[in-house]
Length: 143
Image (tube, rainbow, N blue to C red; front, side):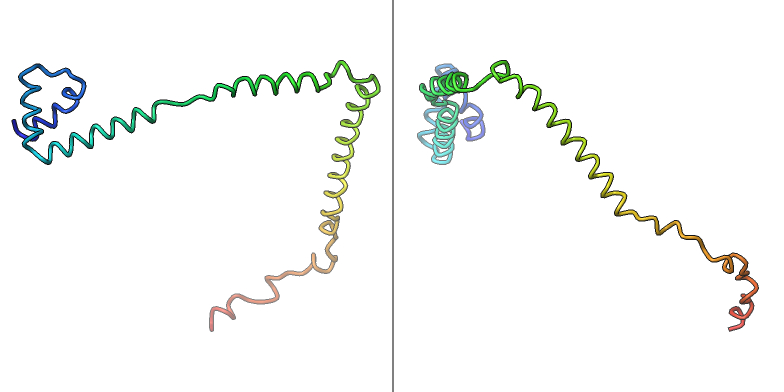
């Protein structure tokens, strides 16, 4: 048996799916060929590592700790229906007032930032000037 054929049969040999004659040939080749035996040992080591990675160790107390934490939060916390009436009304009012104040301040800051300086009128004299008559393009073309 050559090395290429032996290496193709590694998985079947490891799983025990080879027939008796093929299994004997692979074992004989692994005993005689150092490269194939090293490759097979590396394959077996890699499979052991992968199997160890697949196993997850669970903490048996994790679920009980989480459930006790949830129950503790339920026992401590007040629900919305247990709040006094003035807090039920006061909270939406405070939220509405703070939202209105934020919008008002935003509009105020926006108006202060963009002042009305851009609406100045130009002097009347500038509107009567004819720039084309002041300088001739022909002067610049002769240079």
